[in-house]
Image (cartoon, rainbow, N blue to C red; front, side):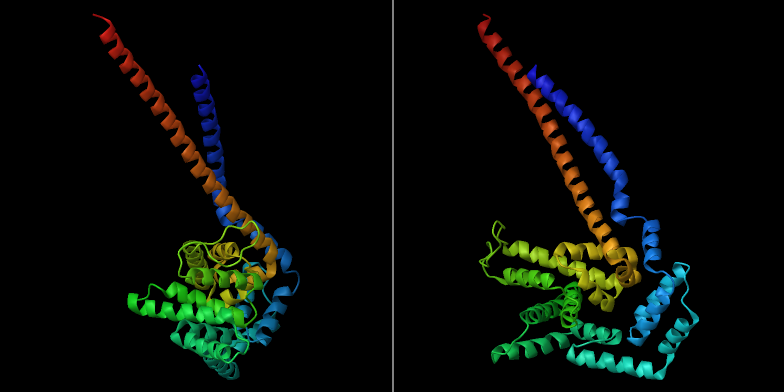
Length: 352
């Protein structure tokens, strides 16, 4: 009797779970998109009153950020707020003047050699140098030399340069399978130099790299916060690989130079995962959308990402629940069969 009641409870709970899953499944597309296109446009409309976009175009041109100026102008057309004639002329002139071309070439070449950048062209040059062995060797010589003579050096840049050099060797050996790591390291190094990498994310990546590089496979010997679980080498390597993949996705979707600037919004590895989804949604518009509606849009994507994770966890729990229910039913049948078998054997022995 009790078993029958228990099975009834299981069936009712399962039915309610299935209904909940169906409801959440209908909500999944909205969770994936973060929030609807209408809401995105509404946020962008509210963030660009009057001549805001025209002013953004002119300011970007003055800073040598031609790519950003083009994005703002395109966004103006999309929102039905075309930029002013003055801004349009400034953008056309900036794209076509010989002086601008020469300046951009100079910025690109200088950043390619030094890794330092303060313009869009410079960012592109720094990223390209770090995609090759040039940037990694430069940083190992520079930061390693400082460390050797006791000067202040960047452990972060030296660590990434070492990983990048190893990835370069792996890229050559495997025909390009490590390019994701190279692209991510390139963005991270340039973001660090240009002040676009947050202190929190720098600390996290440095710790992950140190744990991933340790020789013992067990938990890290590095100090951890009270109550925190020590990080194992395998876990650190997995999280580091996932983070590199997310940063590489940002660079592929938004462009490497814009990915560098988007890193200012990343404080945790979860933020990097959210930003990868964000750039998958907005593509080459990602930077200007983040700059105009930053907290609102990014918060929505974080909520959406958490919602998806909860949905996935719920689905796994439901599958486990159903599997348990099936196992109970099979066990019940097996028990009944065993009882019948024992009873039959007993009767066969008892009856002469």
